Image (cartoon, rainbow, N blue to C red; front, side, top):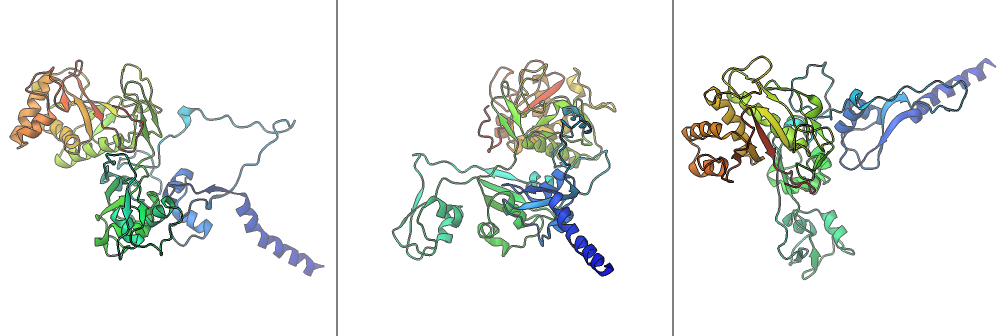
Length: 442
């Protein structure tokens, strides 16, 4: 009898892990997912997910089911049951942490949590170096085709047109990758935008390929100078993809639009945020703001703090006290001044002689040189000081004419930096529409 009881207990012990796994929380991998983003979403680490799922590497596939917690799912309660416990109250929007799983290099005041392995162009450090080049569309509007030449292979044709073999096979029903012949016409599709970024420590080509929906083989083929699938940090990588660089999107014009998948402006030693609830923007807007302040921080030994007043609400739309600021591309920032308090340079009118021209020009020049600003509203009297300072620093007249309205008059339409009433106490920067935000309008 004891022997039978012992065998039964052993059987139950063997079944225990299976039951835990069956009750554990799971997710199904979707297009664009990576282990780091899934881990951040569920408050665990990449190492834990790999251990729970027996993953030998960071590779995951669309449709794959992953265990993201060993804690059992909360059982459904019968609300009609007489003795059932009351459900906990649902958290309001103000109680939910809407911060996305990116930390754009900010100095956090909270206790840091373990950070997952970075994924190229989703990790803040990689995203900083990313740029996108749009390929021009066909002028006649017709699909691009290619006539096979003697000695061609489908892989070479795909490489020549910045496509993938899988894409060509899908676009050409009946096409056999190993059986193409001279004279055959292949639809190679519209050009893909080119994404260029620099790998940071911890990035892998496998992760980069997964992020942009292409294969590692294609990444290696597009970057023949790599000499294989291994690449050092700092290496510039080219990828041709139709996947957006970021999930956030500015929709509609700045005075009648909205914002999807917003990103909150993080804290930074170079600025203070007046109202975090009004500091949401597209991922590109937030990244470019942080990049510019990092540049100012790098150039000057002593940090001076300005104030960021408003960008957009979390979902965009009408923002109190503003006609614009509706799709996450506008930001109001106080000017750098020679004397600033502990809470940042004040948001009040001041004399032009009090402008900290060097820092102010460093901030604006970063956006101007990188083509990130569509327009920057700066009071005309301050434009004069910025113009003369930039000229002394060697900026060419052609660039100054392109960038600054001064000295042509405050009512002339030329220049990215231009005058607009009521900007004596702060500047207003409007960033360009990100290439992948197809519904963004100027």
